[in-house]
Amino acid sequence: MRAEWIKLRSTASTHYAVGTAALVLVLGVAWTLYVDSIWHERGLRSAAAAEEGFLPVVQLAVAVIGVLAATGEYATGLIRQTLTVTPRRSRLLLDKAAVVALTAFAVSAAVLLATASAARLVGDYPMAELDVAQLLAHALAATVLSLAGLGLGVVTRSTAGAVSGVVALLFVVPGIVNLLPTPWSTRIGAFLLPNLVPQAFLPERAGLEPLAAIGLLLLYAAVPLAAAWAVFTRRDV
Amino acid sequence: MIDVKHLTKTYASTTAVDDLSFRVEPGQVTGFLGPNGAGKSTTMRLILGLATPTSGQALVNGRPYREAPEPMREVGALLDATAVHPGRSAYNHLLALAATHGIGEIRVAEVLAQVGLTPVARKRVGGFSLGMQQRLGIAGALLGDPAVLMFDEPVNGLDPDGVRWIRHLMRGLAAEGRTILLSSHLMSEMALTADHLVIIGRGRLVADTPLSDLTSAYPSLEEAYLQLTGSSVEYR
Image (tube, rainbow over all chains, first blue to last red; front, side, top):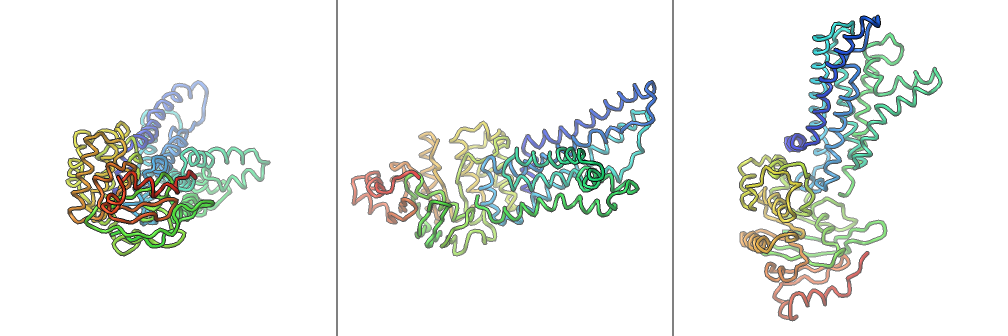
């Protein structure tokens, strides 16, 4: 596991991804100051808090960390040396998943909490109260996406392919489902990744039970990882 | 010791390795020769468990490599020196490998010094010449101080100084009683480095013989190699 940690922290791409996520703090403060300057004259009752608006940026950034943990090795051919020194492939995949999950959760939780606190510190406009539990749930969703990225990266062995998969989960599929006729858009929409955390915290919005929503969220990580395990333990490199 | 037994690897339409058997003994440098596409790299990947054989098996120190309790301390391998993450420093590359076996920073510094990369240890590998990458790959193979070492074309890209350095390194490692399997296309270099030769063509064994037998039967090793593999050069 330590080896995977060294590999992760010693590549520039990881730094860029963490930097992108951290940029949300700056963007969030700018957003808050902007809304502050206009909400009075426009008579806004409330506006989205900064951490809510920039959530997808954080999610995508940590998803890329997960993808590159796998595809970075395939693209360079390093995977052969990695498997030479650690031939136990299940163990290797588990270690990779653990390092990716811990990093993704730490980064997204830190960025979301910092952005939310900063927004409430500098902002005067009416926004939702700071809910640490919900923020941590959003960080969990980002972690899930990162693990899904790792799984897709192992299966596709292609950065472009795996990032496309993650973007599809986050943006494309929800976009298409939104266009379906009304009962179906909400019915299917309830099962989609970006809608799971809100359902866990706003059960009155009629959809999945909070526990079911969190369980389904975890499946979004478990299924790609299981697929990754199935091919990774059998495939020649 | 490496023991290859009736190893066969078939891909969809081609047989890369065809019922190949040979042993690589300790205490000597075994040269692994064959035309491009003869199956040398595939054989090495099969020995390391990177690919699964269609039939037959390869044993390292008496068991399949994947079952080794501490793989890095048994076998060191350099398959493709360019297969490194270009953004990572030489030091971090080796440190990550070392961490898999609880090998410390002191040993990492040791092998960096041994291959002469200490001055550039903190530089990104992406900026290395092929020769420097070869040295880094050799450092990685030596990290675990293994008794079995496999090198696939380590001489490529090295300057004359580096070529001589590798020759002395290989001779020295063999003299310490280690098992060395070394592939190369440079016959003159192989004649100076190897004690024993395994020659394959089209995935099959062509010769498994002491170097001296070949050089006494033919005018030169190059001549011997070309005559032995002449019938098996064919691009697939």
